[in-house]
Image (cartoon, rainbow, N blue to C red):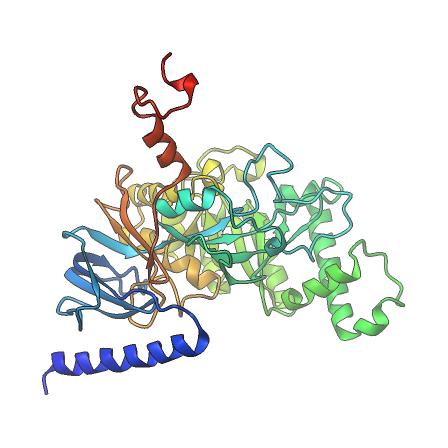
Length: 442
C-alpha cells in the first residue's frame, strides 16, 4: 500500500472519530481546511527551526493533522486556501498585555488593569473576572495576526497585581485558554515605590510576604490566630500559595542587573518559578539567567536610560540574551502593550537588525511565549497534533509593510473586519447618500 493511501486511511479514521466526538458533545465541527502552495515557517523548535517551501498544511476539527511538502487533502470536503507561495507562520502570541481589561487607558471606566492602593486585595485579584470579551481591541489585533495573548493585571498600589490568563482572539464569548497562569509582581524601582521608596524595602517585603504565604500553606486553619503584621489578607495569602511553592510562575517587573541577581538568589531561597518582565539590563547577567532557567520578556527597542536603573539599556539586549541561551519573548512597553499588539513583528524585525537570527526572532513572538506560559504542547509551532493557530502573510512577516491575508484560530478562519475597516469603508466616498446628513456635503 502506498504512503498516500496510508495517509488517506489515517485522515478518514481521524475524521470519523472527531465527527462522533462532535455529535456526542454537541459541538459543531470546524470546517476542514487545506493550505497549499505555502512557504511554511514552522517556528521551532528553537534548536532546529525549519522552513518548508511549496508546502501544505491540513487542518481538521481545529487541529493540524499534517504538514509537509508532499501532503495533499484527503477529500473534497476540505476548503482549499492557496497561499500563492507567501509566508505562513504560527499565530502571533503576545506574552504580556492588558487585552480585554483595558479599553481606554486614560479612562477609569474603560480600564481594569490595576486596583487603587487603598483597596484591600492584591494577589487574589483575577484578570478573568474583569475580562471584556466585547473589547474592540481584540478583533483589531486578530486582524493583524495575533491569535493568543497573555493578559495580566498590574500591581497597582501594592507589590502584587493578581493573576493573569491566556486568551484567544477568536471573538468567542469564552476565549480563556488557561486561567490564573502567573502572579504579577513589582520589583526594582517599581517595587521600591510601594515599599518605603527603597529597593531594600521591596525585597524585604517580598520575602516577608512569601514567608507568610508559606506559613499559611502549612496551617491555613490556624493562621488567623497566629501573630503577624502582614497587610495581605487571607485571600491574598491563599492566592500566593501555588507561587511560593513553585507550582506557578511569578511575573516580575524588574530592570537593573543587581536587582535581577537578587531575584535569582530569591529563586534559590524559595524554589520560585520566575519570569522577568522588561529587564533592560538582563544582558549583563545573561549567563546567570540561563543557568537559572529564567526566561525574560523584553522590549527589544528599549535602548534609552529612561531611569537610573536602566542605564545599561541596549538594542542588542535580545541578541545577547539569546546567544547565552536565555529564552526571550517580546512585548511593547508603550502603545503596543495592548492596543497595537500586532506590531510584535516590528519588534522582531528590529531584533534581527541588531544581531538576533530571524528564526529566533520569530520564535520570540510565537513559540517562546507558548513555552513560557506552559502551552507549547498545543501552540507556538506549525506541527501535526497542535491547535491550528496559523497566519498567511502577503510578504515577509518581519517587514513593517506586510499584512496578514488569512488568520486562523483553532482551525476557524477569523473575519478580519474591524471597526476601523468599517469606518474607512463607510466614509471613503463622501458623495454617498446613505451617509448621515452631516457627512453628505450638504
